[in-house]
Length: 134
Image (tube, rainbow, N blue to C red; front, side):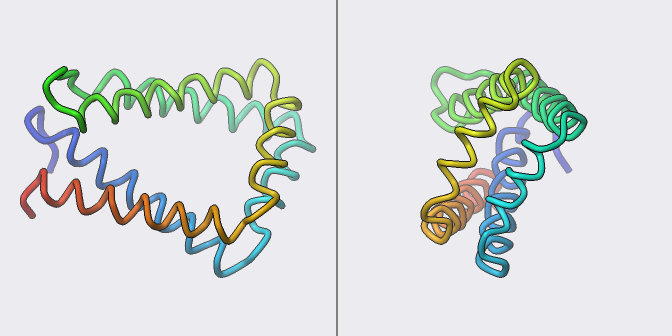
């Protein structure tokens, strides 16, 4: 269970699990991410909901994670939360443009991105386990 002393570790753990699952999904169904980006680009409602959810999750991570300038992991998680917030705001403000850019970025080399996602996810889970001493 999370508390103020280990919240950074738990956020890192769940971000890692998310990255592993997302990468595995792309490996299982190649083109899954590109198709998802295309479907979101095609729907104003999905753009709005995606932007809103990303903005809220990013703000939550940013506000809940304790800021400690002496802790590199704390800084990284805070920056990730801020980045998620900015990404959500960009999707809300200019979803068609932003999602077109994202679609082109992930459209090429899907397996490379999926592998990168899994490696980062494993690194995050490892960092969380070390932090939480599970």
